[in-house]
Length: 339
Image (cartoon, rainbow, N blue to C red; front, side, top):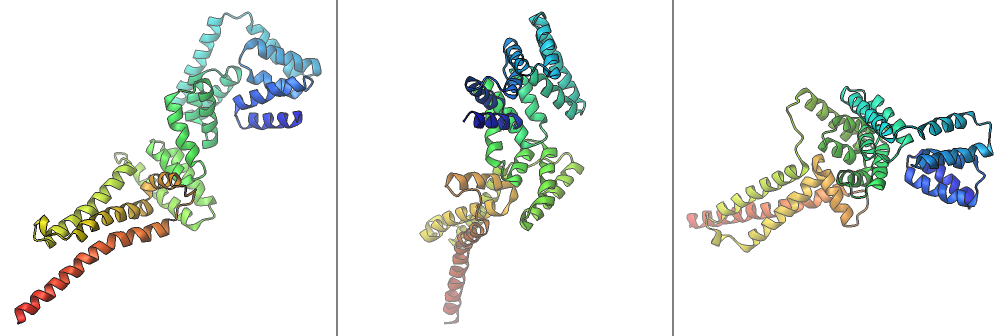
């Protein structure tokens, strides 16, 4: 049981889940205090200086020949005599260095500065938040946000960003669309490129290639802005509904009282059909559809083809009824004229 705890802790540590790794290691050393690796890992995870020193001293008691641990212990003991204000100033200076590197386009340098800082002190909310912004992949970003929320479970920005990332982490096209909405075109493009080269689905590859082309067009025309999926959805539904409304008013001689109740009910069918048709056909609304589908308990894969067919039928039938009724009325009028 204790070895399993250690293995889980090592895996959590490698994955960047520091809070989980720390909790597992603290539980492990209660059962086995003679494992050098456990104490070495704890020395990187416990936040207090004295706790880190104790962890390294325990590791060196088990293996006195570990020169790297001895050097690290010496450095930590030197910090005992440093002014806390000086330590705080050093922390802030490194944060400023990371911000400056980021603003100068040196994202990797800023990322490494923050990682080093957090290895020494993982209690900085600002550092975790900036690390999440600079993370090279979504898993690293999620890990940084999770660690931030361990420090402050009420951090509004971290919660608002983490939830959609976790929801779409296994849906690369929706995830890239999310990054586009957040204005992070480079992250979105990286995902599209990966899908275009690695996906086993021809449909996904083609869609990724199409979105890459759209991204390149937007880069050549920087004044263009990505339209919100909600705006796209609303605009297309209103457009088709307005067209249907014009048709039934003309059909009723511009008198609402002469419009058959069947055609009024057809308006509801047009709205529902337009919604289904849009969310199954327009990539910009894919996130909305994924949210609706999952809330309905449909799982990860949405049946887009069936949804599109249903949308076409619901939209088409009311319009065909108007055309058919108009033709029949025209035939009746023509017969009366002939008589």
